[in-house]
Amino acid sequence: MARELESGGFALTPDPRRRLPGRGAWLHRDPKCLSEAGRRRAFGRALRVSGSLDSSELDRLVETTELS
Image (tube, rainbow, N blue to C red; front, top):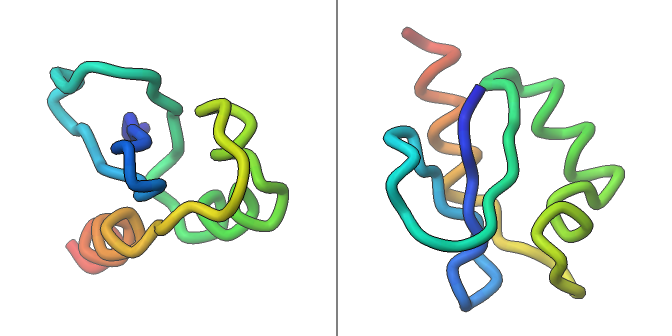
């Protein structure tokens, strides 16, 4: 599982070492889990933000993990 943070500008930031301050959300490093979380707007609820979140960094992390 990976911890994700919302970093002020509505972007999801991976936090693999769990050191960054702020509200976080947990996600399996599986593309299916990422797409399901996006479809259900789970990040917005977990991080208590409204509007859309940029998940490009998170997408890259999941894609890289999948290839390893």
